[in-house]
Length: 67
Image 1: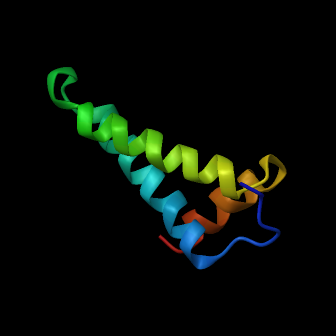
Image 2: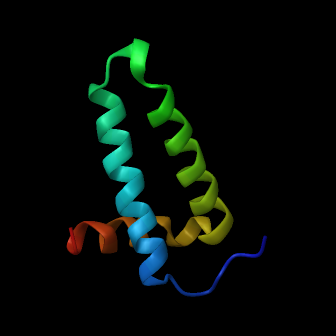
Image 3: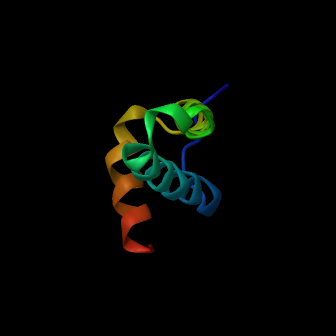
């Protein structure tokens, strides 16, 4: 998949979901974190496919601004 030139509101929401899922996983018991780990992998895959590496810091900043 090709990277997009501009971050969309949808990808900003994906970054917010990634952060929320990551934080939930950090506090989840090891025995019950499979769903969260799978969700984090799916969200990570989408971010890697759609956002150029050079724009990730800006995306994280934008996601935090609107939280």
